[in-house]
Image (cartoon, rainbow, N blue to C red):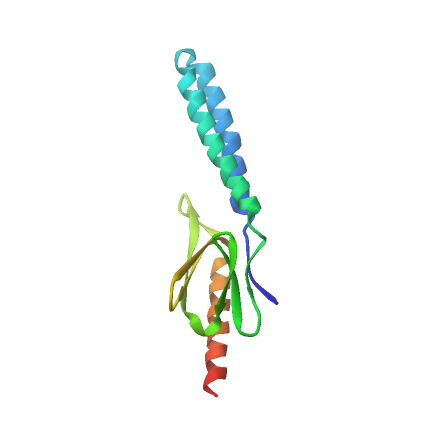
Length: 146
């Protein structure tokens, strides 16, 4: 079984930084504005909880997101592995994540099949993965025509 796509670690890093900043901002605003500290603490706790939820969600995903054998792709989608035959894939699209106009190395991948569209988040080297899937599909098309 060949590994096609893996999960990016940068998303977890950014979520951890967001959790730390939510605590620091809540404390800083609470110290500087003593009469409105309750609202700041509540907002800080909500943001901290959301980032912790995101971290746990990312940690529960497997490291390998897409695998392939001789005839099928195996895609981790909606907390389960889905088998997609090479012949069912129509096209592949990708989108790099951005942060303040900086294009990051990870993003999401869309696989269009005859039945559905599968979107996979947090794919490392997403452009390379899309090109790899496209080349595998083209090789399969050439072999089926011969």
